[in-house]
Length: 319
Image (tube, rainbow, N blue to C red; front, top):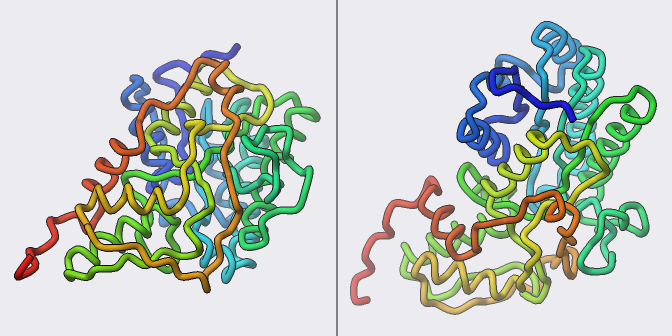
């Protein structure tokens, strides 16, 4: 096992995003003092030559790849070429650039959407490539699968220790609350907050409300990433989740309680549901000594408090 010294250079790609910023917080909390970050203006991850040159100059001891183009069902389904090309480009530049620079260890972060739409639940890591993908996020999933296989191939051909972690649905500070591109949980938080502020009596939720989803607070994921790094994990693909799921209806109700909105839920059946269920088998990472610690109710309160629109909703006359 290769131990990463607390003063060793550790590069977090995508540090301004929800996941990357949480990893930076987790590294600082663990006492790592030489965390490297670059803004898009300082280093464009779509620029292969610039990425390779910077990695060769810096030669980090470890690389956390949290940089990606991400979004919810609508964004994935309408910006299909962008999701495929940009994510392939970003991960190829970073993974190959790390290899060229002699970086022995990194962690590539993907998503639970890599698994087949109808995979047996809870989803085991060996379900990968055993069936068709969910059509609405297929380009993003294909890019992430390519990243996993790229890491596996560098390990096999060149003896690298490039690990891959697949988190479930995430939420927390620095989430994306743009209703056109956000995932379901931040979208519901914003919609419920705005409905409450306007004195409305309905919360419109996409789909039927019956799909089941698992949600992990992002700081729990960050702890998992640092745990894998600190323990020298270099094994096969590993799922990261809490091991529990709930329906979208139940999620909407939990969000309404968090925000204090007491209206009713209206389901928009013209919108897609996506995958019927997505729950990860997390036995592998739990066997490695990590498990999630933030309950959904607590995580929602923390996420709402950190949201950019979280100033108290104005009082509604007569209520």
